[in-house]
Length: 499
Image 1 (cartoon, rainbow, N blue to C red):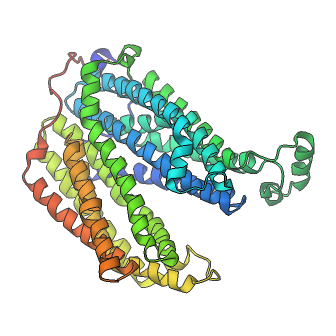
Image 2 (cartoon, helix red, strand yellow):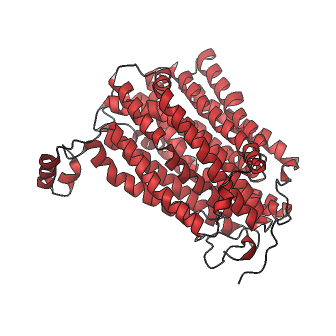
Image 3 (spheres, one colour):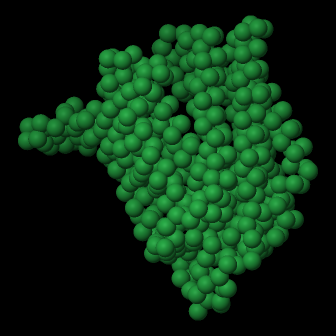
């Protein structure tokens, strides 16, 4: 690093978003984020596939555990948003020393939170798994408790991975987190079959024509895998391995951002700012995670087939959501850095461009998916399964009814990204929570139960919530009060030209 905290441009991997055209920087920031999320889907698919070979109780255990883990990750991930916002705005203001300082403070503070989560989570895991619905003493309950406790034991490593991703995104580097995610997913995919199944009945050996090697290893070691716990060990190790690489890159300055060891010593003023900005996002994510559980309970009122269709719709939604997620997070960085540089008009142009891009993407995707709704839905369920026809029809209706409304969802997510990039995380929290709790859940319950529309009513609730949420959020956005930045744009350390 050069004097004054200015990064060495020869090593800095960040995208320049405060000068020149906006279209290319938005793409360069957003596409790696989408790629990382696609890899995350591969992560989950690998765990589910290999655990599925252990039976239905093992798969159910993952479902129970993920409800707890998702809540924990949502809250922790919300806190890291503060690092993204503050680093982006300080960098835009050319206050590189403060960017590095915030990186160190975010790392230290969220690590402390992770340690607290780890201890409390380990203690209360049995109670949380029971509250979610697992029957104490049953195999699914035992497997879920074991899996969840391992995750809590290694939660610091997982949080370090999320922290590095958030800090790099604020700096304007989304490629390095993508590379680390690829390493992590590759490790997880390789480790899963061996840690879950061991050498006994492991199909990997037959796939590569080495059955004799598998038999020899089993005879030599007797290792038959850790079962469901093996998936947790694989997750913690693969996340931790990538996290350590990320921390090395961070402190070595090889990617531009470089906190010093003194930046790790918590300062009360900085921690307050992290809580002020990250706290609302953590609350938002936690409340939404609970809301999804409530919505699932509402859907359950329509019967098992409806729950199955909702499960398929959820998978489809997670895939459809990827472009909006990538552009929204890219918009956070662009807005943050440009507001830090006091370029309000450019920030607004970036938001408008992002909205146009996401609308165009969703119009194209929905137009392509519409004629093949039943075929797409059928991909997620075996047609020989009892009532498969009804489930496919219900799921296809999600595409035809709710699909077009994703145009509104995309624009809505971009506006939330703009609010977060400006540091207006309380505003983003309110509008995000209203989408689920004010519109989607109540409307779904009324249409399903009162009007007797069944799962179709839930699909229309998606439409109502997305359209109404965009309308209310756009009205607030148009007031323009969100454009005040949250940092002092005067550098705390005079920056000198790089060597």
